[in-house]
Image (cartoon, rainbow, N blue to C red; front, side, top):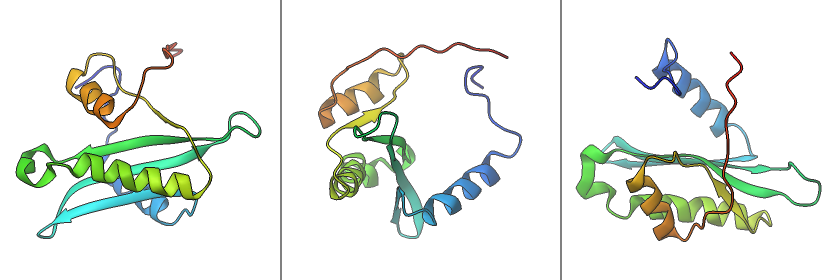
Length: 127
């Protein structure tokens, strides 16, 4: 288990609760992908209003079931395209994505989508 991202006591219930909230929030894009009745991927995006008049999109979650490799070929790009379209419909022209530094496969995926590195983000642990 990661020390930076420890699992909560009831991770499945937390995800189910979060997904239910996302589905009922018009300000959040939440799309899932199923294959033969099995969940194989999802994406969650929203709009951030940190600076007045300069909103941007943020992809918070992109999850793919890599055990279904034949099924997920192209699925990541397809889910990103859904989020991009949803954000563009709302006038958003930029998207921010956080990726851990030591995940070369994940970073390669995002570079393939067209993401460019703009900033470094630092964490200060206070507890």
